[in-house]
Length: 267
Image 1 (cartoon, one colour):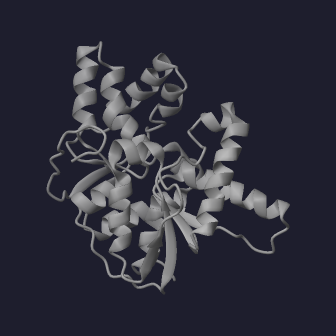
Image 2 (cartoon, helix red, strand yellow):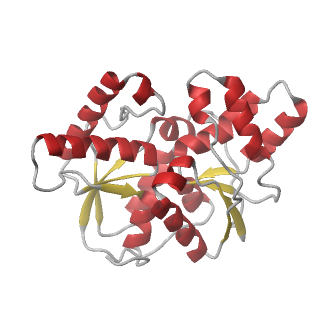
């Protein structure tokens, strides 16, 4: 079942080819996570195709109340994935935008609606794809460690990514997952929310940093770079204020964590 929408999703057989929609944050600020996503998929025997014309999914404009601008951005993406291959997205919030909001954006345009619906059925968040389509199973080659999982609000509500991320971590035999207090609460990022309401955002993320520290985790893992940057950035600022000699909270995208733990990179 696909959480938040009440409809069963039929997963395809493992494909030979997929498209990668990298997202703005991965492309501009976390290219390593994008490359590790590609490496994970290629190791599963899947060819990864990256349409270079891709831009933003349109979510910042959409969630800020600018549907026309969001529609213009989304329309540019509709024709970039012509082959009937899955479109894998290393972000639950961006995947949710493409899967659930694109058809709404083009509801009044029959031709574009048909395109949006066809594309939306092929959109998969990365951890969802690894679990339900690729059948990811790799031996854990890393040392014993303790991690906390953070899942973005959109990924949790609209894509069920907390379940598939947890399943991937559970498959790593030497990784212990601890749960932060108030695990379902927002980190305070919320796309443009953090810029429009900085004081509220700061209070929310400070609470999130405290709960992650108190969990006893050595690092935080997330499938969404926006949340990860917000949490780690606030933790670093608090460390600076406290004149901490070393970072008190570190973390990484789940693609990089999986790649490193399963022997794809130096431990």
